[in-house]
Amino acid sequence: MRVWMIIVPSSVVVVCGLLIGLLYYQTTHFNAHVQINHVNVGRLTASQAREKLGSTISKNVIYIGQKQMVDDKDTKMDFTDRDVSNIRALLHKQRTVFPSSKERKYMLKPVDLDKNHSDTMQRELEQRLLKLNSGLSVPRNASVSLENGKIIVFKGKIGTRYDIPKLLKAYRKQAFNSEVHLAPLHQQPVRLSIATINQEKKKLQTLVRQNVNYTLQDKNYAFKGNDVIKNVTFDNKMNAQINTDIITKKLDVLNHSLSTLHKNYMFKSHAGKMISVKGKSYGWAINDHAEAQRIGTAFSKGMSSIPAYHVYGEGWNTNGIGYHNPTNHGIGNTYVEVSIQAQRIWVYKNGHLAVTTPVVTGTKVYNEDTPKGVWYIEYKNSPAVLKGSEVGSSNYSVNVNYWAPFTQGGSGFHDAGWRTNWSKTAYIKNGSGGCVNTPPNIMKKVYSNVSQYEPVVVY
Image 1 (spheres, rainbow, N blue to C red):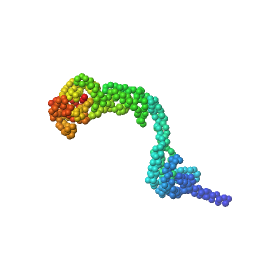
Image 2 (image 1 turned 30 degrees about the horizontal axis):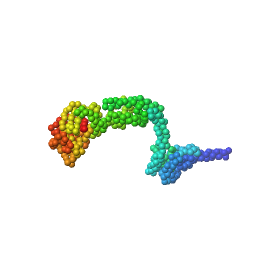
Image 3 (image 1 turned 135 degrees about the vertical axis):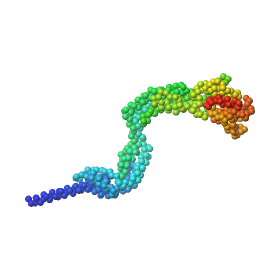
Image 4 (image 1 turned 135 degrees about the horizontal axis):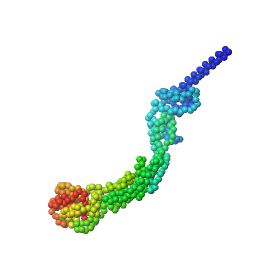
């Protein structure tokens, strides 16, 4: 009995001592299969783990899947004594009452991480990915479109290009590891919901059922959606992008038949004779491509009609002089008629003769003829100083009381007080340098009866 009374208490003391020792060990040491940043710290204290981490060589390698992307020079891991408290926190986190063989893997960012080195590796990774992406296919987003008049629904297609922003973000979370292993992340196509697909289908159906009336010189020309809208896509904001090629072609036909720029005008002379005169600066045309875009936008916005806007011309004013003057074959009833053969001008206001006078035009023998064609009054100045050159005077400067040019080359109407020869044949050898010399005693009346942008017909 005495022996058992001694053995039992002794055994209890030994067991208690072992349990206390085990608990202390478990409190101060990692379990056997614990890793920090892929380094085994099993059975080590926090200080010992810090020393092992700090002495471990970092391979500085980055993998995407099985493919090695970056292999920088080896360095030591950036763990110092300042990391002990964080390592101890992991020690407490993995602690169990009894030893455990369960694997645990932790990631810990060193307090004194060499950010310059990690940034350098990130740039190397980014450059490598950019180079690889240049030869890889991009994903194709899901879409609803109109192709050759048929509604097409495309579900989208995954490409092979890497998603660089996501991969760089994933790298930054592992930048402190000896080996960084990133899952392959590829750019993904945009998917469309059933509601969005149905909404875009409805928009396309509405587009092709629409009509837009295009007003050109007070006449309407119908553009039917079924005829001119064959190809449509949608942008990221679900705005319809209409291919306007067919609209442009239809406008080109209208332009060819209706525009007057550089075309021949049928003109009824003072004598009642119909003659053909080539359009010069006077005339207009429409910008097919710009107007096609406007008509396409009108379809997109559900507009039923739009007036012509992009009308252009030449000379002093490039907005298409004569567009708003469709009468009298496009010349209207207010104009100046200049006959080189008769050496006379006729100024008409609203169809009535306001003034007529003999004139002297450009010198024929020196090829300084007043240019023929349909022009327009560019501007008016009174008084004015005319500067230029002509045969016999390489550099002149003369003062006139009235000046109304009609070509950008410097031809226009003006008084010529210095002229003594006003005969009908003066222009042959003793004409002007291209202007229409007008007698001073009547030039004021001519000047008062012509306005800016009115046509001038020279023949």
